[in-house]
Image (cartoon, rainbow, N blue to C red; front, side):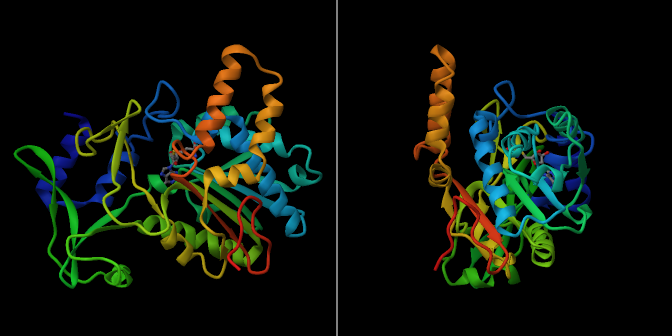
Length: 356
Ligand code: SAH
């Protein structure tokens, strides 16, 4: 039994079953036993790999798209370049290398990393050696300035609540203890204001998810961009509208039972991009774009060919495999989606398009 299991058992015994969101928050960010607070989970030796860790091309192209967004908005002389949940700092390092040649961009930027884990903050500091970066625990700590923000696989790590439709109401899925084992159960049925609009497209027995922390964070980002200008680029797995149970656990690159080893597995859920786009008003959301399409529009195949000329044997094979992994529909190309958010009247972020 993990130390966190013991703490959760005690808590549930004292105050009753907890929501999936409370369970997720404890497992991921408990100060002493949380998954992100106690380790660097990324890479081959870790539990999962992300797009920036697969190839430098991902961050380079995103960097150029963000620099273009900055130019499109009149190249403000001072702006915040922020990333939410930067992992090992690889994406930001690739963005910075790729944008070095964009006249004025580095001189105008102020780098901010929103990161909850001290272990990962240290890794990010190492990756960004030579740059002056600042860390914030929350978006509300960012300075008041135009905000150009990226988030890759951040929103999927935020706690979700799950509800099962019961007649005209909803029962929340809860985590309790049965026979000394963590188990799922259901709370009493009742109305849920945030799910009123889902009564239209769901039936009894359907499960839907909401991510209150995700919408709160994006609402804060939205306020800043609509006040000061800027743009946000969100990349994650998920779909336009959530339906069904997407709560999952990964350990050692394999799926496991999310209740089996609290604190030792990565817990995520698919992102409901419609819910994010809804709180992003008055910003203009781009069309939700598959990652493969987004990267192809930004010229990943040309960049891949250019890099390939310098590689041979196993390095070349790995490079070709990485290109495929990022873009192919049977890999990350379709499952992962990109949502761009820009102020009214500003052009869409390169690689995305606006609905006409
Ligand atoms: N973007 C990185 C890492 C994704 S993993 C990549 O693509 O490789 C999720 C990241 O979000 C980690 O850095 C984790 O520590 C951070 N994180 C999770 N919940 C957070 C929260 N509530 N506030 C700030 N950072 C958080």
